[in-house]
Amino acid sequence: MDPVIDVRALVKRFRGTRRTAFAPATPDSLALDHVDLAIPEGQIYGLIGANGAGKTTLLKVISTLLLPTSGEVRVLGHDLRTEEAAVRSCLGLVTNSERSFYYRLTGWQNLRYFTGLYGMSRSTLEARARPLVMKLGLLSAMDRDYRTYSTGMQRKLAFIRAFVLETPVLLLDEPTSSLDPLSSEEIRSLIAEECRARHQTVLLSANNLLDVERLADRVGKMAHGQLTPVESTSDLDESLRVARIWLKEPPGRVEAALEAWPPGHPDIRWEVRERNQRTLLRVATEDPQRTLPAILQALLTAGLAVDSVDLRPVDLEEEFLLTASEAEAPVPGVSP
Image (cartoon, rainbow, N blue to C red; front, side, top):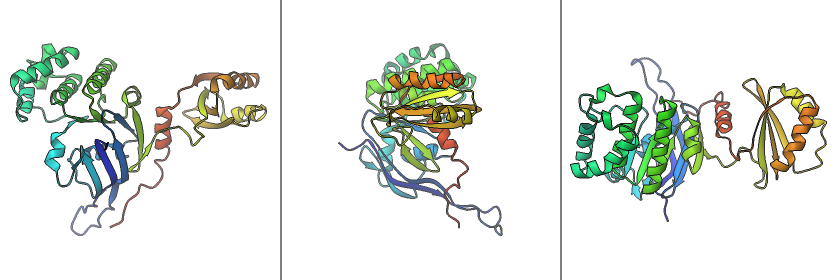
C-alpha cells in the first residue's frame, strides 16, 4: 500500500534578497535539503529539531502554502504540483499562530463560516463539534466573541475546526506551544483519541518533546534542512540497549571510575558526556537491568553520587540536544 504522505528528494531554497538596487544580494538559504519521508495510513509521525531546522517549512510545503524548489510530494496519491486543490481537500492544518479566525464573530459563528466553505450543514457541524466542545470545556465560551478568548481557548477552537472537517490527513505545528500544562494535556488527549478513532495520518512538529513522546508512533530529527529517523540514540547494535546515568560529578572522575572497573563483559560499551553542568554516562549492554547494579556499585565505590537513572529505549531530549549541539556547523546554502 502506498504511503498517505510521500515525500521524495524534497528541496526548498529561498532566494537571497537585496536591500537596495546596488547592495549585494544575501546568500540563498537551503531550508529543506533532499528530504525523504513516507507516512502510512493512521500513523502519527513526530518531528523534532531546533528552531530553523526546517520543520515548519516542511509542513508548509506539504500543505501547499509553499511551493517546493524540486522533489516530489504526494498526499493520498495526489501530486502537489499538478493537483494542488485535491491535496488541500484531504488535509487539515493547525498552526502555532492562528490568525484566520474573525475576532468579532463568536466561536460558533466562526465554525459555521469556515465549515460552510466546505458545504457542511449546520446540523452536521453541531453533531460533530458539540462533543469536542464539551470535551475541551469550551461550551460556555462558544457564544462569546473570539477576541475575548485566551491563547488556550483559541488553540482549542482551532483543533475543533480541524477535527470537524474529518480530513484523512492532519498537519500540526507545535500544537501545545504557549499553553499551560492543563490545556496542553487536554490537547494531547484530544489528538490521541480523535486521530486514533478516525485513523487519521498525522505529521506533528513540536518543540515540546512531551507532545512527541506521548503521541508519535515514529520520530524524525531535522537539522539544517535534513531529516533523519530517530530509531536509537546511538549507532550501537540492535541487540544492545542503553542505560543513562546522570551524575553531578566532573566527567574526568566518572571516566576514571569506569576505567578502574573490570566489567568482564566485552559487549558493554560506555561513553561520558558533559551537559548543563552535569555528567551523562551512557552504558550500552544487552541487559541493562542486570548490568546496572554493578555499574552503580563501581560509581559508589569511587565516591561518586548518582543523580538519576533512565532506562528508556530512546530519549528525545537527548536527541534534541545532540541536534542543537550541531548548530555551530555551517548552514547549507548556495551563494548567488
